[in-house]
Length: 239
Image (cartoon, rainbow, N blue to C red; front, side, top):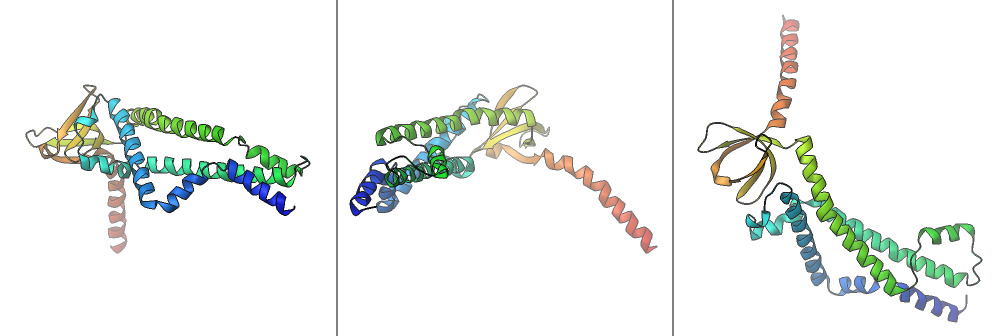
Protein backbone atom coordinates (compact mmCIF):
# COMPACT_ATOMS: atom_id res chain seq x y z
CA UNK A 1 0.00 0.00 0.00
CA UNK A 2 1.42 3.40 -0.96
CA UNK A 3 1.45 6.49 1.18
CA UNK A 4 -1.32 7.95 -0.96
CA UNK A 5 -3.42 4.82 -0.44
CA UNK A 6 -2.75 5.07 3.29
CA UNK A 7 -3.98 8.67 3.40
CA UNK A 8 -7.09 7.68 1.42
CA UNK A 9 -7.74 4.82 3.79
CA UNK A 10 -7.45 7.08 6.83
CA UNK A 11 -9.81 9.65 5.36
CA UNK A 12 -12.38 6.97 4.56
CA UNK A 13 -12.17 5.58 8.11
CA UNK A 14 -12.63 9.05 9.58
CA UNK A 15 -15.54 9.76 7.29
CA UNK A 16 -17.58 6.73 8.35
CA UNK A 17 -16.51 6.75 12.01
CA UNK A 18 -19.79 6.55 13.85
CA UNK A 19 -19.16 8.33 17.12
CA UNK A 20 -15.64 9.68 16.89
CA UNK A 21 -16.87 13.17 17.72
CA UNK A 22 -18.75 11.82 20.74
CA UNK A 23 -15.66 10.09 22.11
CA UNK A 24 -13.64 13.27 21.59
CA UNK A 25 -16.29 15.28 23.42
CA UNK A 26 -16.21 12.85 26.36
CA UNK A 27 -12.42 13.08 26.57
CA UNK A 28 -12.30 16.86 26.33
CA UNK A 29 -15.39 17.61 28.47
CA UNK A 30 -15.61 14.70 30.89
CA UNK A 31 -17.55 16.64 33.53
CA UNK A 32 -20.23 17.79 31.10
CA UNK A 33 -20.45 14.30 29.59
CA UNK A 34 -20.95 12.68 33.02
CA UNK A 35 -23.62 15.24 33.90
CA UNK A 36 -25.51 14.63 30.64
CA UNK A 37 -25.25 10.85 31.11
CA UNK A 38 -26.60 11.07 34.67
CA UNK A 39 -29.51 13.26 33.54
CA UNK A 40 -30.37 10.64 30.92
CA UNK A 41 -30.20 7.96 33.61
CA UNK A 42 -32.52 9.99 35.83
CA UNK A 43 -35.09 10.61 33.11
CA UNK A 44 -35.08 7.00 31.94
CA UNK A 45 -35.26 5.63 35.48
CA UNK A 46 -38.13 7.94 36.36
CA UNK A 47 -39.95 6.90 33.20
CA UNK A 48 -39.48 3.26 34.16
CA UNK A 49 -40.77 3.82 37.70
CA UNK A 50 -43.70 5.86 36.41
CA UNK A 51 -44.92 3.06 34.13
CA UNK A 52 -44.23 0.40 36.79
CA UNK A 53 -46.36 2.12 39.43
CA UNK A 54 -48.99 3.07 36.86
CA UNK A 55 -49.69 -0.67 36.49
CA UNK A 56 -50.83 -0.54 40.13
CA UNK A 57 -52.85 2.68 39.60
CA UNK A 58 -50.37 4.77 41.59
CA UNK A 59 -49.31 8.21 40.37
CA UNK A 60 -45.77 8.00 41.70
CA UNK A 61 -44.95 11.60 40.77
CA UNK A 62 -47.18 12.78 43.63
CA UNK A 63 -45.13 10.96 46.26
CA UNK A 64 -41.47 11.34 45.25
CA UNK A 65 -39.12 14.01 46.51
CA UNK A 66 -36.03 15.47 44.88
CA UNK A 67 -33.90 13.04 46.90
CA UNK A 68 -35.96 10.12 45.57
CA UNK A 69 -35.41 11.30 42.00
CA UNK A 70 -31.65 11.53 42.48
CA UNK A 71 -31.57 7.98 43.85
CA UNK A 72 -33.62 6.35 41.08
CA UNK A 73 -30.62 5.06 39.07
CA UNK A 74 -29.21 3.48 42.23
CA UNK A 75 -32.52 1.82 43.09
CA UNK A 76 -32.86 0.59 39.49
CA UNK A 77 -29.45 -0.77 38.47
CA UNK A 78 -31.00 -2.40 35.41
CA UNK A 79 -30.98 0.96 33.63
CA UNK A 80 -27.22 1.26 34.19
CA UNK A 81 -26.78 -2.19 32.69
CA UNK A 82 -29.00 -1.19 29.74
CA UNK A 83 -26.95 1.95 29.05
CA UNK A 84 -23.73 -0.05 29.32
CA UNK A 85 -24.99 -2.52 26.72
CA UNK A 86 -25.99 0.32 24.39
CA UNK A 87 -22.57 1.95 24.72
CA UNK A 88 -20.89 -1.39 24.05
CA UNK A 89 -23.08 -1.91 20.98
CA UNK A 90 -22.20 1.55 19.64
CA UNK A 91 -18.51 0.93 20.26
CA UNK A 92 -18.60 -2.41 18.43
CA UNK A 93 -20.50 -0.76 15.56
CA UNK A 94 -17.79 1.88 15.33
CA UNK A 95 -15.07 -0.80 15.38
CA UNK A 96 -16.90 -2.76 12.68
CA UNK A 97 -17.26 0.32 10.46
CA UNK A 98 -13.54 1.09 10.71
CA UNK A 99 -12.63 -2.54 10.06
CA UNK A 100 -14.75 -2.57 6.89
CA UNK A 101 -13.19 0.69 5.73
CA UNK A 102 -9.69 -0.72 6.14
CA UNK A 103 -10.56 -3.87 4.22
CA UNK A 104 -12.15 -1.88 1.38
CA UNK A 105 -8.94 0.13 1.12
CA UNK A 106 -6.73 -2.96 1.40
CA UNK A 107 -8.65 -4.96 -1.24
CA UNK A 108 -9.97 -2.36 -3.70
CA UNK A 109 -10.61 -5.01 -6.37
CA UNK A 110 -12.99 -6.91 -4.06
CA UNK A 111 -10.86 -10.10 -4.00
CA UNK A 112 -10.66 -10.73 -0.27
CA UNK A 113 -10.03 -13.90 1.75
CA UNK A 114 -13.17 -15.77 2.75
CA UNK A 115 -12.81 -15.07 6.48
CA UNK A 116 -12.39 -11.35 5.79
CA UNK A 117 -15.56 -11.31 3.68
CA UNK A 118 -17.40 -13.21 6.41
CA UNK A 119 -16.30 -10.74 9.08
CA UNK A 120 -17.31 -7.82 6.88
CA UNK A 121 -20.78 -9.31 6.51
CA UNK A 122 -21.09 -9.84 10.28
CA UNK A 123 -19.85 -6.31 11.01
CA UNK A 124 -21.96 -4.70 8.28
CA UNK A 125 -22.71 -1.00 8.65
CA UNK A 126 -23.91 1.56 6.09
CA UNK A 127 -21.13 3.54 4.46
CA UNK A 128 -23.04 6.80 4.78
CA UNK A 129 -22.26 8.51 8.09
CA UNK A 130 -25.61 10.28 8.35
CA UNK A 131 -27.48 7.00 7.84
CA UNK A 132 -25.30 5.44 10.54
CA UNK A 133 -26.24 8.22 12.93
CA UNK A 134 -29.96 7.85 12.17
CA UNK A 135 -29.85 4.09 12.71
CA UNK A 136 -27.94 4.53 15.98
CA UNK A 137 -30.38 7.19 17.22
CA UNK A 138 -33.41 5.04 16.38
CA UNK A 139 -31.80 2.00 18.02
CA UNK A 140 -31.09 3.90 21.23
CA UNK A 141 -34.55 5.44 21.27
CA UNK A 142 -36.35 2.13 20.73
CA UNK A 143 -34.19 0.41 23.35
CA UNK A 144 -35.00 3.04 25.98
CA UNK A 145 -38.70 2.96 25.10
CA UNK A 146 -38.68 -0.83 25.40
CA UNK A 147 -36.96 -0.56 28.78
CA UNK A 148 -39.17 2.16 30.27
CA UNK A 149 -42.50 0.79 29.01
CA UNK A 150 -42.45 -2.91 28.18
CA UNK A 151 -40.00 -4.03 30.87
CA UNK A 152 -41.94 -2.03 33.48
CA UNK A 153 -45.14 -3.83 32.51
CA UNK A 154 -43.32 -7.17 32.62
CA UNK A 155 -41.93 -6.47 36.11
CA UNK A 156 -45.38 -5.45 37.36
CA UNK A 157 -46.85 -8.69 36.02
CA UNK A 158 -44.06 -10.72 37.63
CA UNK A 159 -44.63 -9.01 40.98
CA UNK A 160 -48.33 -9.92 40.91
CA UNK A 161 -47.84 -13.48 39.72
CA UNK A 162 -44.77 -14.60 41.69
CA UNK A 163 -45.62 -12.72 44.90
CA UNK A 164 -42.01 -12.88 46.09
CA UNK A 165 -42.27 -9.48 47.81
CA UNK A 166 -45.12 -10.37 50.17
CA UNK A 167 -44.84 -8.62 53.54
CA UNK A 168 -46.81 -8.21 56.73
CA UNK A 169 -47.41 -4.60 57.71
CA UNK A 170 -48.50 -3.54 61.18
CA UNK A 171 -49.81 0.01 61.40
CA UNK A 172 -49.38 2.23 64.45
CA UNK A 173 -53.15 2.70 64.97
CA UNK A 174 -54.10 -0.92 64.26
CA UNK A 175 -53.16 -4.24 65.87
CA UNK A 176 -54.34 -6.36 62.95
CA UNK A 177 -51.47 -7.07 60.51
CA UNK A 178 -51.93 -6.66 56.77
CA UNK A 179 -50.48 -9.18 54.33
CA UNK A 180 -49.75 -7.25 51.14
CA UNK A 181 -47.37 -7.13 48.19
CA UNK A 182 -44.59 -4.61 48.70
CA UNK A 183 -44.24 -2.63 45.46
CA UNK A 184 -41.57 -0.23 46.64
CA UNK A 185 -40.66 2.61 48.96
CA UNK A 186 -39.71 6.26 48.77
CA UNK A 187 -38.26 8.61 51.34
CA UNK A 188 -41.65 9.20 53.00
CA UNK A 189 -44.00 6.52 51.69
CA UNK A 190 -44.45 2.76 51.38
CA UNK A 191 -46.37 1.40 48.39
CA UNK A 192 -48.26 -1.89 48.65
CA UNK A 193 -50.86 -3.94 46.79
CA UNK A 194 -53.66 -5.89 48.50
CA UNK A 195 -54.64 -9.02 46.58
CA UNK A 196 -57.87 -9.34 48.60
CA UNK A 197 -59.29 -5.96 47.64
CA UNK A 198 -57.31 -5.76 44.37
CA UNK A 199 -56.32 -2.23 45.29
CA UNK A 200 -53.03 -0.41 45.84
CA UNK A 201 -52.28 1.36 49.10
CA UNK A 202 -49.91 4.15 50.04
CA UNK A 203 -48.73 4.38 53.65
CA UNK A 204 -46.86 7.20 55.27
CA UNK A 205 -43.62 5.88 56.77
CA UNK A 206 -44.42 7.15 60.28
CA UNK A 207 -47.80 5.39 60.25
CA UNK A 208 -46.12 1.97 60.02
CA UNK A 209 -45.03 0.18 63.17
CA UNK A 210 -43.28 -2.77 61.51
CA UNK A 211 -42.79 -4.56 58.19
CA UNK A 212 -42.00 -8.29 58.15
CA UNK A 213 -40.92 -10.26 55.12
CA UNK A 214 -43.29 -13.22 54.82
CA UNK A 215 -40.86 -15.16 52.63
CA UNK A 216 -38.39 -15.33 55.52
CA UNK A 217 -41.10 -16.49 57.88
CA UNK A 218 -42.07 -19.29 55.52
CA UNK A 219 -38.47 -20.52 55.47
CA UNK A 220 -38.14 -20.68 59.24
CA UNK A 221 -40.42 -23.71 59.90
CA UNK A 222 -38.39 -25.73 57.38
CA UNK A 223 -35.20 -25.02 59.32
CA UNK A 224 -36.72 -25.52 62.78
CA UNK A 225 -37.23 -29.33 62.60
CA UNK A 226 -33.67 -29.73 61.31
CA UNK A 227 -32.28 -27.85 64.30
CA UNK A 228 -34.36 -29.86 66.77
CA UNK A 229 -33.28 -33.15 65.19
CA UNK A 230 -29.62 -32.13 65.41
CA UNK A 231 -30.01 -31.18 69.05
CA UNK A 232 -31.73 -34.50 69.82
CA UNK A 233 -29.01 -36.53 68.11
CA UNK A 234 -26.32 -34.63 70.01
CA UNK A 235 -27.97 -35.27 73.37
CA UNK A 236 -28.42 -38.97 72.55
CA UNK A 237 -24.78 -39.47 71.59
CA UNK A 238 -23.60 -37.64 74.70
CA UNK A 239 -25.77 -39.90 76.84
